[in-house]
Length: 377
Length: 216
Image 1: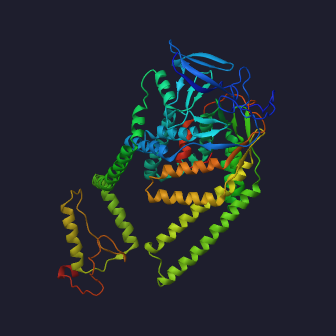
Image 2: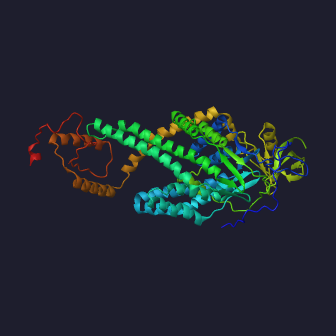
Image 3: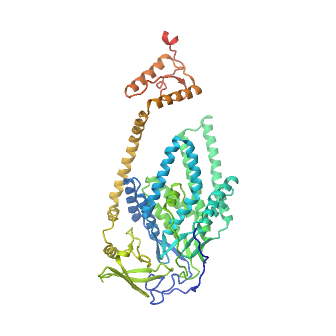
């Protein structure tokens, strides 16, 4: 396991007022004395430059080639998508880069596909194998998550420095296995605290060069967000039960027909989707306001109503066009998320320097997507 | 030296950028100059990111930092000149510049795949089903019969109704190559099933009288 020294700043540079520079605006080319990256401690917004038309071209070609190559190209498609999204993200005048090698992701994809086919085929003949495989997957989950995070962090670069993820397997086992059991034991009441722990695990183990991310958000806000969402979902479930009762009464005591059930099920799915988006919006600002990079802070300014409106129109557009407007939805979502995010440097950033580490594994990255984990990082 | 491209140089050691100019010398070296930076690196050692939309180009200088070059036609032409051979992504770029063609091809392909699955899967399933060895088929039939016999009562269908089903199965049998001669047994399922009598045929009120042999 990689050992990382605690953060230290031998030559802290005092914040200076911004001054006009010839180069990129923030890192001027003054001969002999390059100024610090962030001369002013004023908030620096994340700026997203992507546009839907441009991404549509990339997405449609990715889709076409992935289908034509029976999924082989999807490894390249994944890298191109991430490169596009990160490459269009600007902070302090500089863009992010994603440097993953598609061939490594392809190897990861192939391993996951082979394992899944083995599970499906052998599981059909010998059902006991299914339980064994599920057990193995659950036990391997912390490793998969850790490797996925390490892989993605390692291949994300900003201003020539790589992000890192400190891959602590024991901490991952604690969060993703042992504490998950507490959710079941507490009948779900521990879930908001677990979400907070999960975010703490993910954020606090990331770093940019030698700078450490910290997560200080309080648990109470997580409980509040899930409580609000839970109340809304519960109210809907009550309404659903009443509707079902009325339907059964209308049918003379018989169960509702599939045609009658369809709108109810659609409403149920819509409410679950809205609840997920509501939780995201309620927690976004709290999570980012509780995140620091050394002494530098972040600030989230998401508006819940606007986010819900955005997601509802996105969903309608995607369903209405059989997925063709997915690129448009993705771009406007990414743009809004970045519009809602600011970086507040406490001083110049040039005390942050390079840190050596291992590269992580694409298998974990692929497996994490395959089992439906989306950390939203 | 010909074109000079504006870029930001990062040494990869600290989080600090330096505005620089990048040029290609006659002996195919990259000359990077600006502020305290004065580097001369063989162009072959520079790893150039592929063009993707309008995101900047990134040049990784094999352990000596990296360059961030804003996307422009001039920068794209300059970097094409650095690559030893045409980029493998040129086909992808051509497709991207004809997004309508790509979209039409994708929709067409999706349609072909959907139709193939819709028609092909049942055919494949049928072929697989008839490829089952006779012994396994016999075992499956016995197990199925035992399960049905345990759960359902014998059918109360009349002789002629049973004959109708037998006749329909007989016609079906002629279209298939069977390993075994199937034995037809009737159960009372009280639910719709594939071999139920035809619509409008109410067996509860129909009095049928089987021939003498059947009654015995």
